[in-house]
Amino acid sequence: MIEFFSNLFAPIIHVLQFILGGFYTITSAAGLVSYGFPIILLTILIKVVTYPLTVKQIKSMKAMQEIQPKMKKIQEKYKSNPQMLQQKTGELFREAGVNPLAGCLPLLVQMPILMGMYYALFNFTFPSAEAAAFFWLPNMSEPDPLYILPVLSAATTYLQQKMTSTEMNPQMKIMMTIMPLFIGWISLTFPSGLVLYWVTMNVVQIAQQWWMYRGENAAAKGAN
Image 1 (cartoon, rainbow, N blue to C red):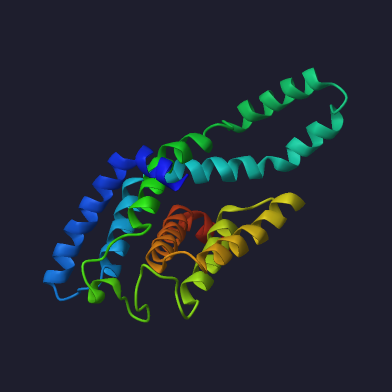
Image 2 (spheres, rainbow, N blue to C red):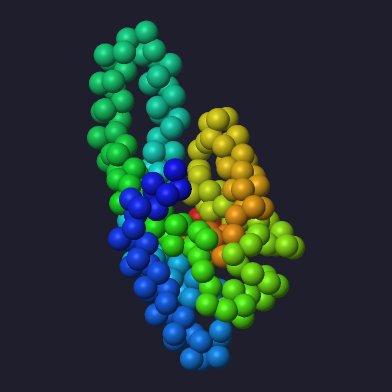
């Protein structure tokens, strides 16, 4: 399965590895011989390039969450009339200016890039022992021996989800707890370079979401 997807995303993987090598040339010339710095730089570059898609995705998700109470009322009122339920749901979407697919399409566009990054770093061959090490990590091809990155991967995933979520049903609340724990658990066995990418991606997204909603947060504080 890994080989199949690796071949499927081969063109994207080659481009990402080429850029990663370019960043390494720059950082190593500056005396930073670890590949950890190029991984961070490449992750930031990807998040900056895909920022417009991130904005659309997050705004659509928040809009869908904000109309959830009205959705529940419609579902309860017309649960025995599927045709009317569909009609009223469509009317609610139009009134709120919400497109249910708007949150999925940006994610579908970003997915090949995210998958390419995953396979670009999975079993990555570092040119030297110094290049493979990063701060407390002796080798980024191996799991984090101190479990710092797995903990950070779970914590940043939870925070990123919490910043996006407003109104949540019980199922969403459970998922918001399970998903970070699952990410942290699988990070225990993943190459630490890959987990570094995930943590960096979460941190950048948290910063982007704060930037997107800084005006709303300031207005909410002013109202209080």
